[in-house]
Length: 428
Ligand code: AMP
Ligand code: MG
Image (tube, rainbow, N blue to C red; front, side, top):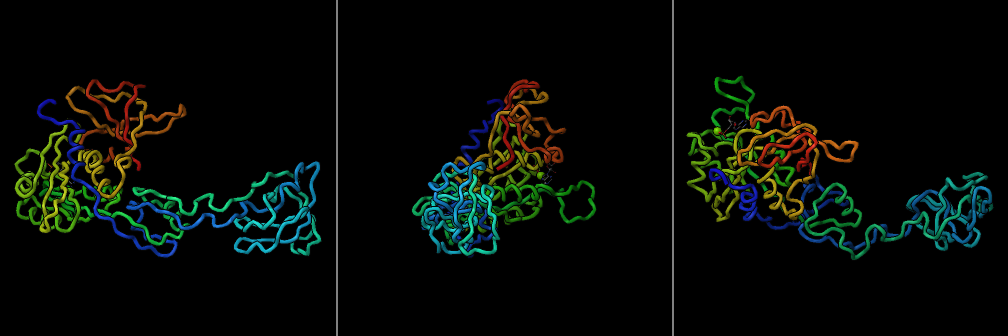
């Protein structure tokens, strides 16, 4: 690789290797309800259901529980009349049986009465009498034949008792939380969310809202990194802005290593004289300083900082340029942090699809893979199409912020309009 640059895959392997999931812990839940902090957490053990869902056979519709054999051939032209002998609402017990030539009015979710094997939906019936009177003398006309099982939800046809509903490695989404509630799983073993220290370095950075003094800029990377860490299923711990001062930085890094499972720094990993992150980490941690064959985000550092308890804490040294910070987080920190959060390998990376470039994705040959920020959309041809965002320099975060995908443009002359390109979708 030109000029000592290493391929992205090699950097990724190196970073992922020491990053494993922390210990599993039990997450206690309120009845039927998970605390918001459990969302995104990853199950550390299989969940086996102790109950059937639904717990009993019940009606899928509002209508009339019947014996399918009684309404064979029923149609609007030739309806079948059945005596209505009772009514069952959701939440009630099915205390009336259905005999030949009889029907029971039933509501969605109500238990199926003994004897009935199907439900005719109310739209396929005509009830001529007064619905409020149910004295067993009234009839319903059924306008449609049903087969056994129609309109019925069998016990256990969502989840069966004894079944593994969710394998270890499943992330808790709102729907997963609801299923756990449906099977009365009041406690689930989940991986502890890794605590990830986030800090920015640079004497030029301020975040206190005061007017900018000459040479100062507003710090922005922490706002982004905290959100990106959260998307990994980890908890960001803000360690603020650290001045370009070796003693101060060393102190913050050591405290972060004692308190967190990983550290993400921004800035100070290039070749400049004030790149104190490089100076300090080279001294106190076991680091690899990489120049990766990608653009943006060429400089990147990864290593292990052993804390006071003897634990080797992964440190991700991202470049300070905001777009570079974002891209190196996406490519390198994200898979490692997701691994630490307990996600299975299939969920470490964002989805990648092949897209069509609507305009040329221009680039020159430089031995690097370019990660161009693009807007992706589904088009009428059923394919994903992409367009470059208006500005691609590594400090121009405003344009990148509107991207929803990153095109992976290999070394060469770029992708012509209409050409295909792999894109990383910035969705989970
Ligand atoms: P560095 O990686 O420290 O050499 O910084 C590279 C560029 O990114 C410089 O222009 C910095 O001012 C800028 N920069 C570094 N850190 C941040 C940050 N946290 N927020 C916004 N810009 C930053
Ligand atoms: Mg700096």
